[in-house]
Amino acid sequence: MLLHRLLLLGGGLLAALGGEAQRLERPRVPARQLACTIEPIAREHYQGEPIIFRVRIQNKADSALTLVYALEGSDALFRAPAAYFVARQLRPAQLPAAGIRCGTVAGLDSTDFVTLSPQASFNPLLKVAQVNFLIPQIYPTLPAGDYEITFHYATLEPEQGPWMGNGTYWPEQGGQSPETLRARHWAAMRRQLRRVPRVSLQSNPVRVHVEPARPSAAQLGHE
Image 1: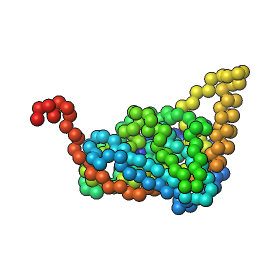
Image 2 (image 1 turned 135 degrees about the horizontal axis):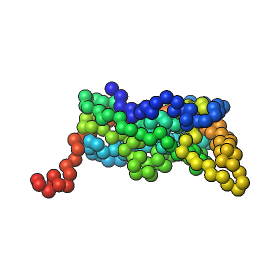
Image 3 (image 1 turned 90 degrees about the vertical axis):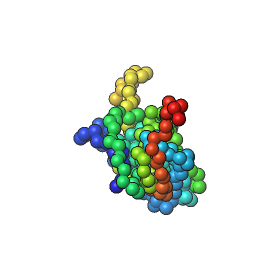
Image 4 (image 1 turned 45 degrees about the vertical axis):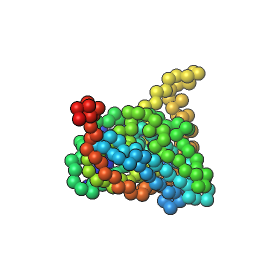
């Protein structure tokens, strides 16, 4: 069984994310030109606590490549790039029910792109993991049991809309209308997105054992 925290918010999500359809002409690179690896930071893992991984994507190509950091909603496939963990159960356990997620996700800007020189690497989760309340959403949070975990990263989305997010507010500025400012921003992002190659990556598998929830301080005090 695969645990993939993919939540449904109802129909029309991609339309809400995108506005006008803008298909991106982008090159596709073989997955072998990029290496994706993960390793857990801690040795012990407990039920209900996020399992934090170091995630590394390395450029194995002979030339520089431009990629995009995972952003709010990437883990739930609300937006591009896709960036999520999959946990395969090695023995039966009762999986938690999917929670409710807000469908509003932050917009895309130039700081969300990273250019990797040959042999350089980056952590695609670096930016989104700085938001504390998102950590239990982006990293596996599992009941007690044994799992094999992989990380997946993909830039295959052909339309511009799902890359852009839907939480950007455009106030009038310098006599320019919100519509004009938004159009200029979309055009600038489209130029940058065209440099992002189409690729789908899967990391090495990591096996973890998740213990029952660790005892609370109150429980420890009564032992």
